[in-house]
Length: 440
Image 1 (tube, rainbow, N blue to C red):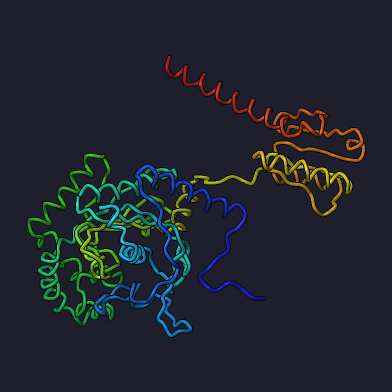
Image 2: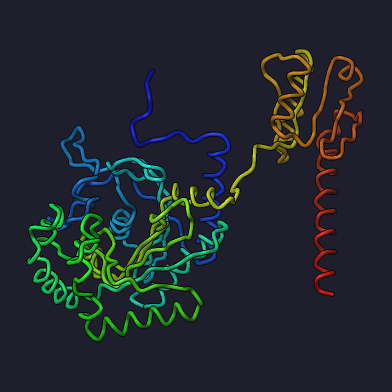
């Protein structure tokens, strides 16, 4: 038997409906903030992701799927969405039509890492990118969009962890003191951090191996090395977060896992006991040099990304049902070949009119077909045999009210539509009544 590759998974049934629902919520929230969807290729030229030999992030150095195509071109399966969006922004000259582009994407990403619950080698990522503005307000808007999405999924306890990496001058000054500090402890650094010490000392602060050691805790903090511009900018971001009442914690060690960030970096956390210490559900930051590094014009940008698997797990652990069991409007029980042919014609009319329908295609008996109607949670069960067919009638059961009637075959669609409309109107009346009582 051929099995799926390690770190991949199949999605079907109720789980597939949960995926559809979460994507609907994402698109709705992005619409509220006026972000437009962009779709980029699943694979790109390798230089889109492998741009800088000093990039020490695990994603770039250890986790990408790289290969040569049949024309000996170096290709990489996308490990994240931002770089591909940046390439598309440059190639399609999106900056010509709009000075500020607010974009979002939903797509498959690939990283060769150790699979664990909620983290796979093939995974789905949702992200937003706001390109063209250096305003602290748009940093706050991106963070607010992330918090709004989390709350829209029923997860209420959201905390923002935030830090500033400052501009290039601030980072260069800070790197010097970091090298001076960590050079005293070379014998105690892990192999990755020894490499980072030479290439990008900021990344040492993201280490999961050394972070609990005393010399790590006593490392200089970047906030003490920000120049005036960087300090003022960061304070403006914090002030605006206060204005929208979004709680945050300033984390001096937060640097994020990718090397192109500058100024604002942040993580969004949810309080879910099952996640333990791994409660980060989304993250991002500002990148003011990425577009120019890829050959485009100098462009300010800020972005954020979520793993959809993590969002779905968070929703599941919090008891928030994103989707229900499958339910259809009508299930047709047809007994005999002639009845099945007639049922197919009626279903076609109903489907064109917007009603979901199904029937048995295996020639099953009456009892078995009733079970299938129940399994599909059908609102109506319609029974058609030779006797009904001769009279041009059909038996209809409303499974919500248990009412049963024999109606004309011509009346199937209008009968069900009328019933559904009445139920909808009734629900609206009840809702209005409840609201009236509240208003009183």
